[in-house]
Image (tube, rainbow, N blue to C red; front, side, top):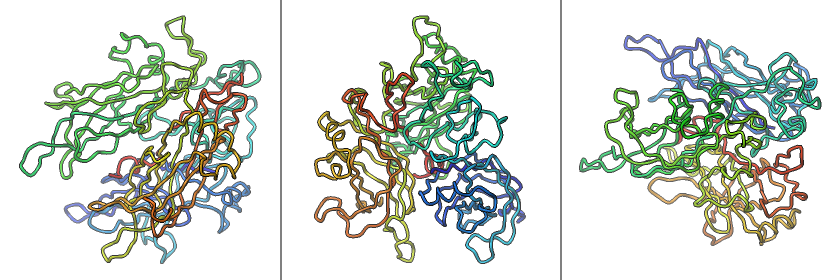
Length: 612
C-alpha cells in the first residue's frame, strides 16, 4: 500500500521572525511529515510568509500489517485507536543560526478512503513531547490518497476510471471522474498512477473494440454520455547534459575557469522544475526528467501542429530552458536559454544551441556559449486512439511510449549508450533505504548520520548511480536504471522463475552497493545486496543489506539497514507473447503486449532540488 500526502498550503501561521524594530511579523515555514517517529519527507521552505503555498507531494509505502489494519478500520472509532497507523505533520519556522522553531502539529489517522482537500487546525501537541509548542495558530490544507490493489470496490454504474485512488477518494457518485491535484504551477495536475512503479495498469473497462472509451461507459459501445474524458496530455522532458558552457566562476588568479550549472524549465512563464546543480564543470551531465500536463486547448495545438511550419508559430506550446550558474551569497548568473517547441512525435536527444534571449527580457544574458542535449516525450494522451491529425494517412492508434512506434525510443536513465528496443532488458528502481549505518560524526565526535547513495552493477559493470542524500539514515531516491541483457541471459531469467533457480550463481542479477559520500576521503561502503532478476518482476521488495564477501572490493566490516527495490523484466523480441505473464505489462483488449516504460518519480521536491 502506498500513501500519497499532498501538503497544499497553510494560512494564518504564527509569526516567529522579528523585523528591524524587533516585532514578530513573519516566518519561514515548512512542513515535515513523520510516520512512526521517522521523517518520510518535507516541503520546501517558503520565505517570509504566514500564508505559504507548497502544493507538495510526499509518498510512503506501508507494510502488509499496516495495510490490513487500515483496510479493517471501517468506522471513525477504529481510526481513533492508539495502534492505528497515522501521520504526524509538524510545521516549522526555518532559522539559519539557531534551531528551527515548531509552529504547530497535526496527527492524521490513515483511512482507506483517503482525505479530500481538508483544512486542519494546528495543535500544540502533548506537553514534554519532542514537537510540543506552547503557542500555535493557523490551519493547513492537506489531502491524502491511498493506492492499493486490496481497496474495496466502489460502484461506478458503468463508468470506468484509470485512477487507482478512485475507490478510496470518491465519497459520492456526483464527484468528478477526472481527479486532479495542483502541483505548484498553473494548470498542472497529479498524474494518475497505480501502485505499480513501472506502469499505470489499464482496466478491462478502459477500452472498447480496441480504442479508449474516454470515460463514456464500458460495455455499451461508448454511448454513455456522462462526461468526456479529459483531453489533456502529459509531456516528459529529459535534460541529458550540456557542453562548452560559459565560465562564470573565478579561480584564485581571478580568471573565469568554471561554473556550477543547472537548468530551470518554464512553461507559459511558470517554472515546472529544475535540475541539480553540478559543481565546477562546463560540461555537466544531469539525465533528469521533468513532467508537465498540457491543458486541453494547448494539447490540441500539439496534436494538430506536427509539421515544421506549425512548430515555429509563436503560439505553439513550447518549453523555455534557462541555464544558470549557481552562486552562494549572490544572485545566480544566467548562462543562456533555449526555446524548444513540443512536437507530438517527441524529440530524441537533440542538441540545442544556447541563445542570449531578447534584450530587456527577464532571462537575457549579454554573452553565452555551449549546447544542451534534450529529449521530449508525450507520455500520456487519452485521445491518442481516436484523434486524427491533418495527415489523413496517419491515425494515432498507439500511445507515445508504445514500442511499435519507430519514432519513439525509451527515455535514457543514465545508460552509456542506447540499445535496441527489441532487445530484452531489465529495469530496476531504487525507491528508498531505511535504518542505514551512521558513519559521519557530529561536533562531539559521535556517529549520527550518513550521506548515502547507491551504485548499481550488472556483471561487474556500473549501470547507474542514485543522487547523494545529505545527512540521513533513511534516504529516498526513486531512481530508475535500465540494463539490456543478452538472449542467453534472458533464457536463464525465463527458465529460472522459482526461488531456488534465482539463487544459483549463474542467474542474472543486479549488485547494489550503498556508500556514504565523503568530501576529502574515499567513500565508505554501507552494505551490499544482490538482487536476482525475476521474469515476473519484483515490486517494492525490501532487501537486508549484507557485508559482502571478505577480501572483496565492496566488503564492509559492519552493516545494517534495508533497501526497497522494484524490478521489471521486458523480454522484447526474445519473449514469446503467449507465455508472457509479466504482471507489470499492460494488455490491450486484442491480447497484444505493450512494453512498459519506467520513470523515476520523485515526489519530494526538496529531494529533487535541494540535495546538492
